[in-house]
Image (cartoon, rainbow, N blue to C red):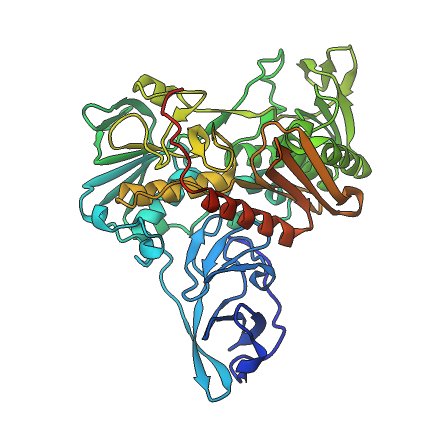
Length: 530
């Protein structure tokens, strides 16, 4: 994964620093043996790990320390300060740790400790309800889908010491890869191709994770069997459904033209990049996150860009009016022209005609009007459904030994007290990791606070929590100055916080939501069917 290297600043920790300089809970950014190192004091213990997040290279020294963990300020990955273990996605790999010695009144960072990314070291005992009993009892695990949830689950099985058969079924040849980048830096030309795969070539084979490129024909929950097209069936001891989502198709006249693209897969992004090389005028249909990120990327490539969307303010339904207005103004500042309150009527060879008769010249058209969960397999198998696959707090479906995670799963959220379904990359990864641990007997409730980020040019918006509706919005700061926090609440309860360049507040809000849920204790169980 690509990222930004942390510069070698601060003291040479290999030469040592005074122990008295760090109080319990303090951290110090320095370097040792040519690498950036984060030194922290946990009680009377001094620990040292790599200072750069293994996801996108975020500066861990600017993150939040909570207990014996540190959270990345950029995308909220979490690491164990004692071992460097990656505890929460989006980071999948640990960061290195260093041995630390106390020499009199000084603390000295010694040699680096590294290990294989999937070494069986995940500390399942870090929560009281974790056990390892399941690691030896599940004879085979099959995962449908190699997206965020599926790939993270497969890796977590190995990190937890599971030595049985792991098979991931996905018909897309390029998966797993970094899907969020497809509309952001990769599409804009700022991220090289080598950043896109989640892991190097042969990584999964080297760790005995078998990726089968096939379409699933049927799920037989009574026979614990997955039927594939043109291949032998797969039997499972436990199954994880992580089928993800697919783009919504408009079915417009002219939509099948060679200059018209949807953006969901790596192949889609590559096709748009190729088309952008000779295009001059682009029309983006849809004011979704994908649509607007695509508009920003195409502007970065120098194309004239028009955005067509039915709403009056882009992203207002998710981000509120203040941030919606800012995002619109930001894109207009960069040269994007909006056609809001309008819908496309048809697509012609070199134009998009709107419902009011306006004709927009276009030699490239990208449609980004949202996605829908892939539910056909779960519906065919007779699983409990409610605008998604219904799962309990352990991510179990209504069928024995069948779990679901990611975009398809609707789970009981302890923070809102409602059953919710979201389509966020980080949430899907974390669900996959929890599902994997529960397959192995952990009995871990999925209680993570939802998180996502959206990038537009040089502005990244972080969003923590979940607010489908709200009756109170509080704006602190000014989005126009790239310094704002927008709090969404309902019935006096804070639900979500969106921030621009206020990473500390974003992390603090996440931690406070977690603590609030802990103070409330276990919530009344939300039934599988309502």
